Amino acid sequence: MTILIDKESFQADLSEPDIENKPVKLPRLVQVRLVTALRALFQQIGGDFYTKDDVLTVVPRSYIQTGRVLKHPVDVTFTKRPFAEALSELSSLSGLSVVLDPRAQTDNSFAVTADFRNVPVQDAVRVLANMAGMKSVVMDNLLYVTSTNNAEHLQKEKEREREALPKAGQ
Image (cartoon, rainbow, N blue to C red; front, top):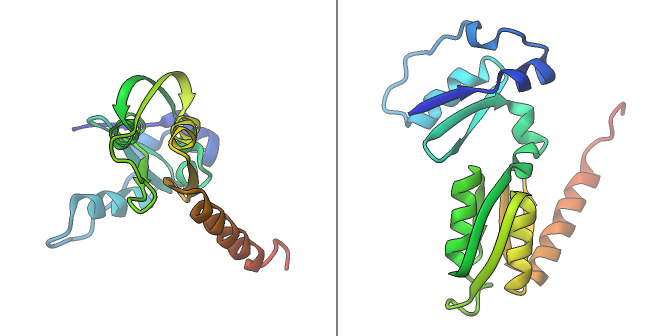
């Protein structure tokens, strides 16, 4: 597995010029998944990771939390590709989780045709969802493709949660 550290992001976000040489310690972990061990390591430097193809990229945690991962550009062409397969390919190309609500997909044979060149993955998913009569909803660092009604319900729920949070300085 190839592991890349996005040094520029660590410099910009955390003013950490030499992130690759920052010491970390791995406590003794027994019977844990690799993802758990990696998160334990990267948390020590304020980092997290995403995977794209066979590459694990280490970035500042804020990169994931602020949604910058949603703006990863994709280059892909779909010609009469089944909708669910197209979403799965966008997920693989971007390293972002794209989840299709099976309750909302009424026609499993629906196919899409689209040519995306240097398009943020969030926008590509939104366009494909629109073609299928659905909507995509950003949920932290994943995109959820669901019915229009459910998407609106989830958006309102998210707004209520945001309003319930204490305001800065209070």
